[in-house]
Image 1: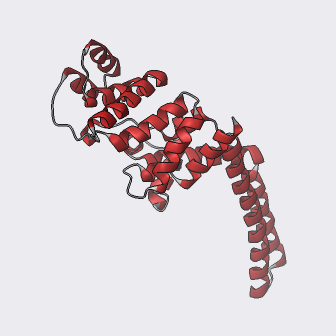
Image 2: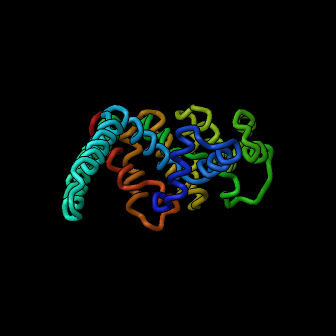
Image 3: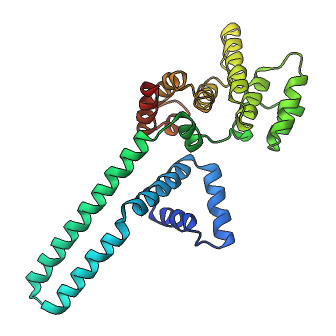
Length: 254
């Protein structure tokens, strides 16, 4: 998404509160559906904070003002204009490079399992499931009623594999990562016992997210590393090299 200038500009305007209600609603829908958009928004938010912290905007503005005053007063020849603009452009570039370095350093060293979870978690969409049956639990999940999903799950004497998977996601959405972990691990165990692969790759990703939410980075990291290394994994694009580096730092910092 960061190759799309128009969308990036809209995200900046969204961040600054400059969009009308219709545009803002459209961006919200995009953010709900596109993890890369959410990551870009978070990066823009952090960059904005870095700019404010380092006073970059005022410094760049001052350099621009100096350049314009020099061009007005000295009225140099064409070659002089080019040299002046180059000199000031290099100064601005140096400031921006410093800001970028500060931004990425801040992101890296301020990372925590909880931050990595909040920045990267996206709810599982029921239309992504490979199940075709209907149940009260599944219907509740499809409606986004997570408390009802959990309630239905508790009533089941013999939950099916989809029940475990959707319940795990409902717990994760409800900020109950320990219960989510239990549900996902149970599903993995049942798959192993039955030699099946229901929601196998989905479970790996959401179990990793659950471990991050539970502040268990040492358990999340191997799963994230596996997903990142497998380009055919459905969640490969959700685990970027940058996310993996931050997860590795959090893991070793514990």
